[in-house]
Structures are given as C-alpha cells and as structure tokens.
Length: 208
Image 1 (cartoon, rainbow, N blue to C red):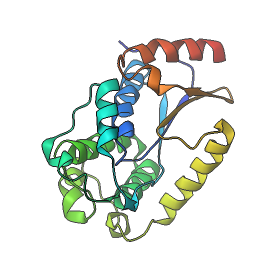
Image 2 (cartoon, rainbow, N blue to C red):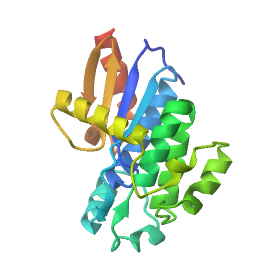
Image 3 (cartoon, rainbow, N blue to C red):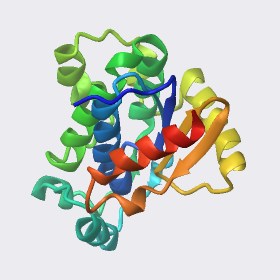
Image 4 (tube, one colour):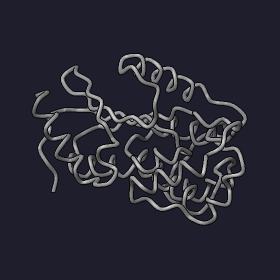
C-alpha cells in the first residue's frame, strides 16, 4: 500500500560493490514502494577502485544484521580486489538520463555481483542487464580504467553532503523535505526492513 507524502527526496549514498550497501538496498526498496512519490537520488561513491578487497568478516557481519544472501561464486572472489569504477560510471549516467530506471538497474547489478559472482568490470559483464532494461549508455560508461565526468561530479556532490552530515560512512540514507535533511540510521532497520516505512512516515510528518 502506498502512503501519501509531500514532495521529498531520498538520497542513497552507496557503492555497488559494498556488502553493506547491498543490504541497505532492501531498505530503499521498502521506502520507494511505500512512498512512490519520493524521488530517489542514488549516488555512487566509487569507493572500490581496484586496490581494496572485501573482508570475509564483513560478510559475516552483514549476514548477522540483515537477510541478504551471498552466492558461493561471490564468496570465491573475496581474495581479489574489487573495482566498482564501471558501475559508478554507468549509474551516474542512468541517474542523469533515465532516473526511473536507476534503482532497478542497481538491484540487478547487485544481484549479478553478490549472488552470481560477476565482477562487473567490463562491457561483457553488464551488457545483458543493459539490454534487458533497454538502456543505451555511451561507450565511456562501460569502462573501468577511469571515472567519467558525470561520475566525478556525483562524487563531488557526495563529498558536500558528507560534510553536512558529518560522516563519510557508507551506505547513507538521507531524507530531504522542505529544505530539511535528515539522516536515517539504516542500521536500525536491517534486521526488520519494514520498520523503515514507519520511520520515514514519522520524519515526513515532522518535516511537513
């Protein structure tokens, strides 16, 4: 059931290759389903640049606090550094050109990565998803050697928001309404994702 809501934005600061971002995407889905008039501002931070790995301890922690599952193929890739550059480029493009497709694209990419073990670092690894959603990103968005200008601009905007909220931790969920910005503590809702709907409803009532 959708709920009435004033004009509001949900900022979702994440990295496609971050397990905690994968878990928090469930919360984003709950909010968007309950409040269809909320505009999603998905912002890829580009944290994984090919030099850092995901710790098995992180997967254990995510598994304890959320209900998301990690596929065996993904677990087998933990010894390899992660690089989310291509996805950062792709998501920056889709957010600018076809924002309504952004979250669906992200969830499909997250499934491909965290369940199927797809590294998402070249055109071949994402082309089936792009074709399924009938998207036509330029070739520059399907590279992992450098960030596009759109992705760099998105990261710059993230830095400004992080300065406002006083944390660089990802993921981050923020609700904006009537020129007010509220940081939603996603950790409170990972075990019971439905609870974030009531939290957002309360915040919207306070901000209206």
